[in-house]
Length: 367
Image 1: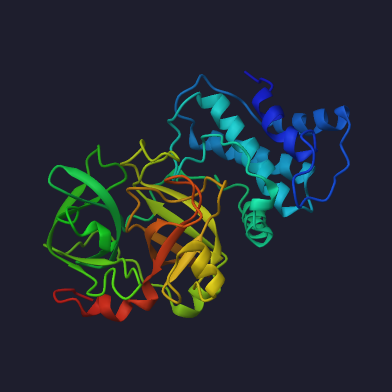
Image 2: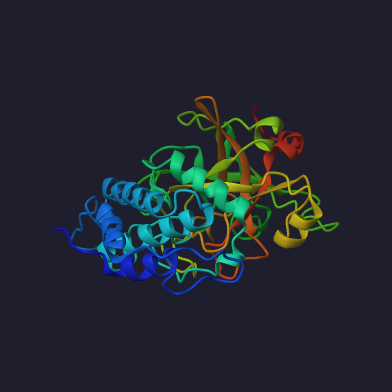
């Protein structure tokens, strides 16, 4: 059944064609006529087929992503800030109308439509990066989908619960976040859903970085030495410094929550592509703005975007692609200082290349 997306008309048209007036810092834009607005909405609607609610299949989400891309391209082909905002509103409205509630699942709640942020709060360079990411990945569901790929991404937990994510980097070594060490580091899960059958391996020792939380640095890493070797999953190689330094986007993978309030969705492996804001947090403005550690951390994502990691993704991998191969570049640590919600406004990731020597030095690892 094909339907008009009235939520989209309200969410996208109002701010992308000036119906609410220009925001502070915006150049006045000529208003499109009603016929042109309808033409652009029809361009989106012709691609969108709505189901009966509930979880939206991955193939359908891809259609929404393609359609939202086409709509944003028609409305704002040369304005990165508006392009990204229009794309986000269109995609959110389409999925929300189909879904009606949570269920599609993704990292930090992409499917939950959010009020648009004022234009002047969006960094144009960040918007340009996200615009290029969307244009280059229009057939990739932007915002997070369940995945069977990246089996080296594991859930990390203790007792009878799971609470973090991690990455297998050697046959008996998993890297996770330092803040997961206390109370969430006695076992790991290999599989796509912690509520379904998978392989559980006990942790022999959990070693947190000796300078965790010291000297003004976070050093937010823990190395888990497993009780047995893993022979059916290939460990992920750590990315080289030069490749991380020039990364334009990262692929975030984890088992975490899926809404901006970080209350639901934990337990299923999902992925999302997010544009890099700063690869090494080298400049003092970045350090002050985002709260990242110079030379040791990477920042990806931005306020309003709703493409992010969330609670439960802590310690989980971010990957970069070099040629045809994917390498683990970092571990999820925390939200940025500019975040206004628990999830959805950008994240900080510990660069593993900067800690590889220490990771390999932890006793018991088999490299």
